[in-house]
Length: 81
Image (tube, rainbow, N blue to C red):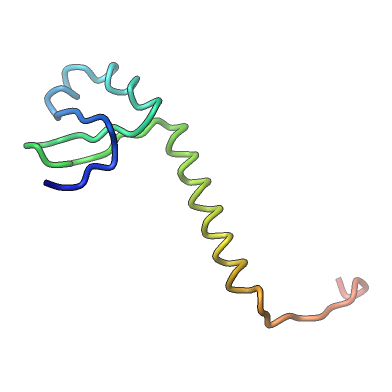
């Protein structure tokens, strides 16, 4: 069985029949869409997706800061700016 990265699952058929209900359930956490009992897609609310992108950007920024902590540094004076 494939790993599922959500607590809620829904079949493609159920998704077609109850789209509004399934979309409402994405407000709390992702929903896995299963096709023949295999994960086919993940549904996320817009807010959840935006928060996920912000966290990813923050992580990338942290890694960039760590990479640049030891230099090289360029010295400039305020007058040069």
